[in-house]
Structures are given as structure tokens and as C-alpha cells.
Image (cartoon, rainbow, N blue to C red; front, top):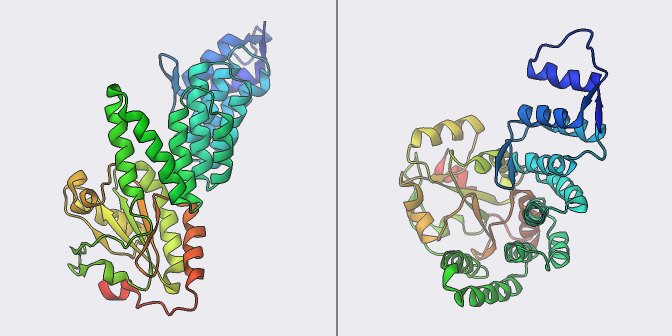
Length: 354
């Protein structure tokens, strides 16, 4: 029977606020008991084969302590899975890459393994490692869930600047989905994605909107001669809020060299937008018409999930659709360097104010 040193288990119990004697009678604790303590402490939710928890630094330490103490414990597979899920749920994709890789190496649980493989690729993509994601997708291609991983490959190809290859792959997926009436929802999702990809290499579609707060008219021509990030987001969108400080830093680093952001906020209550914009010091224009998913810009650009970004070059040509936040520094620098000899237009900040 696997057992746990009393000192380690006492730490777990102490964290839980459980009373224990200063001189315990037992010298070891069963592994199954330690697993129950860990699961309770993490507040793990179980639905069929799924294991879920919110993720936290303290929880990660407890999981690692458990794994160290029980290198061959009966619940090692579940603990490794929880470790990966914990990083995923706090958007720590760099650590999620390693954690999912570690889990995949030892797991034999077919359903959890399939999901882990997909999230492994997604974590690589969101860590700006598209080549590795494509390589691993080929390795995982014979396993269940390969269609979801093909979508990751589409996004990885876009991040590599290969929209034609990505389009060909996606069109094949659409043809396959169209042959199965039970997959109508997937077909719609794939067709929406193709519509977004078809923006690449073309001028940014026309719009004429009023900037929130200032009321200034904003069109694609407003940003001509500058790199533009069109960012769809909302204050109620957790991943949007996690990446927003990074966008503030991106703007501060590159604005004077010719980079701008236009935020399209889907909040219905503009007071929430004001609090975030002022609190984070977001000095770029925002558009908000208080209509959530019926926001006119979201409808025109076929946006159904956020965060969603469109990166446009100085000539007004769409170059990237939905790049991860981790890749933006690299991509913005690339577009700035492409036209380094051109003089940037007047900073949009000076035209519209905060």
C-alpha cells in the first residue's frame, strides 16, 4: 500500500484548517486518503470522466507535493491531468505545454488523453510555437479528436503567414462536414472561420464608426500609414482581461513607431468599459454601441468569439486574423520592419484623445 509521510500530510491538513494532534498516533497515511484530501482542497469537480478545478499557485504546489510523495500512486494519472488543467484555466500556456506533455507521456485514459492532446497543441499555439504545434498534430493524427486538432493546425499555419495552405485545409474540413447532417453546427463554425480567413491579403473592410467618449469619426483611412490591431473584447471576458495589460505594454512600446489599436468593446454597460480603460491606462480609441454580440462591428466582421484580433499593415491590408497575444510583439515588429523606410502617419492618439 502506498503511504505518505506524516509531515507532508499534516501540512495538507493544516492548510485545510483540520485539527490534528501535535503528536499523531500513526506514522503513515494511505495514499487514497491523501488523494481525497488533495481533491477536496482543490475543490475538484467531476463530470463523468472530466476533472475540473479553477487553478491556483497554491494548488499547483499541493499537486506537485502529492506527485513527489507518490511517484507510482494509484491516482497519479488524475493528479497530472489536474496539474495541466490548472495551468490551462489560468491561461498560463507556457506551463500548460509542459504539463500536458508530461500527462500525455503516461496516460492511458482515452477520453482525457484525447482532450489533453488538443489542449497541448492549443497551448503551443498560444505560446507562439506554431511549428511545434503542427509537428505534434501529425504525431497525434491517428488518435480520436483529430478534427479539433486540425483546427489548431489551421491557426498555426495562419500564424506562420501561410493563409493559402490554411484555407485549403479548412476547405477540406468543410467538405467533409457538409456530408454529415449531424454536424451542421460544426459546419457553420468552419464556414465562419473561412469567412474570417478570407479577409487576409485584402484591404480592411470599410467601416465608419464614432469613437466612444470623443465621438470622433473612425474609418480604415484614419489609420492609413500605420500598423493597426483591431481588437474585439469585453470586460466580462476573462481571457480578454488577462491579456489586456500585455496589449497596454505592446501599445506603449510601439505606438511612436507607427502602431495603433482600435478596441471594439462588447459591453452593454459602458461604465464598465470606462473603469477598465482608466484603470489600465488604455490610450487607444474604443468603439461601443452597448449591443453585446449585436455590436455592429462584431456583426460586420463575423465575430462570434472573443478575444479576436485582426492585424493590418501600413497599406491597410489584413495580414493576420486572430493571432494569440503572445505572438503580437513579434508580428507587430515584423510589420514595422517591412516598412521601416516609410514615415509613420500622425499618431491616432493625438487625433482622438483618450
